[in-house]
Length: 289
Image 1 (cartoon, rainbow, N blue to C red):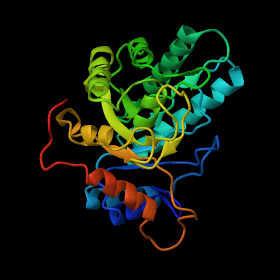
Image 2: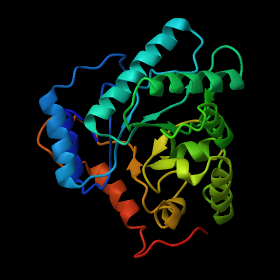
Image 3: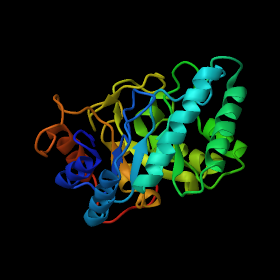
C-alpha cells in the first residue's frame, strides 16, 4: 500500500481494502537516503497496525541496493541503505525487509553469492533486533542473482543458516525464471524442489503477481491476477495449499492512475485483484496437489 501522506495512511488504506497483511516502502525506493521518521509517526503506525490486527507487515528494500557489487562506493552505499532499511523496519515492528539479492558485475555467480551473504552477516551482526531479511527470488534478467532455489539456498548457507534470513517467493518471477506453476505437475515439482533445496521453514511470504511474459522469459513484468501467462489456476492452488495457509500473500499488481494523497478510498485495481484471489479460496485449505 502507498505510504503517501505518512506511514499510518498505508494502514488506513489496508483497512479500507480489508487486508490481513501489508507491505510498504519504509522510505523512497528510488533514493539512497530517506526522511527521518518522527517518533509520533512510528507510534501511530504501530498503534494502527495493532488495532487493525494486520499481521505480518513487511517493507520492501530500495531498488538501488546491490549487495553483490564489487564497486567499493556502490557496496558502501548499499550496505548503508540496507542497514537503514533494517533499522526502520525494526522501529516500525515489521517482520522483515524484502530484498532483491543483487547482481554481480565482476567475477562470477559464486563470487556474487558470497558477497551477498557476507554483507548480510555484517548487517545482522550489528543489529540485535528481530527483523528478518527476506530474500526475494528474481526473474533472472542479466546477472541478477536469486533466480534459482539453489542460489537462494547458497546465500542462506553462506550466512551459516542465519535464523533471520528468510525467503519471499514472487509468482511472476517464478514463471519468468523458468519454474512452471501452471500445470499441476509443474506446480508440485516446483514446490517439492523448493522444500528440498531451501526448505519451507525459510518461506515467510508470497508476492502474488501474474506475468506479462511467458515461462522462462527472464523478464519481470507484473500483470493483474488471472490476466497474464499464469492465469487463475496457479493462484487457486497456492491460496488453498495448506502448507501456505499461515503465510502472507501480498499483491504487487499495477495500481490505478493518480497519486494516493487525498481521502482514503478503494483503489479499483487493488480491489479487483484482491477479489480475484479471495474468490479462489475454498472453505477449507486443501493439501498439495
